[in-house]
Amino acid sequence: MSLGSQQGNAHLHWHLAPLPPGVPYDEQQFHAVMRTNGIVTVDDDRQAALAHEIRLRIHF
Image 1 (tube, one colour):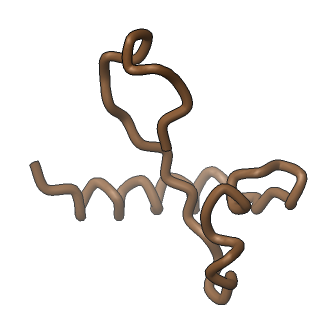
Image 2 (cartoon, rainbow, N blue to C red):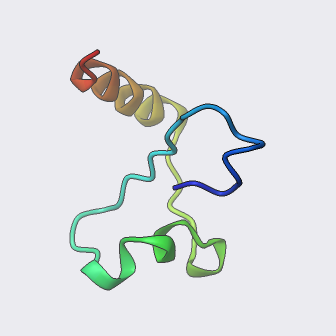
């Protein structure tokens, strides 16, 4: 997701928004990151485990 101009954002980064299983396709894009559609809470231990899993799967 790019939320800005290339002039002001001369870098690349990602925001990962994991979804629970079963979310319909039409609710998986911007719908998934809109606060008005609710927030999935993730405790610190689960968030750390997710971060670890993501790091294991990133290949540079």
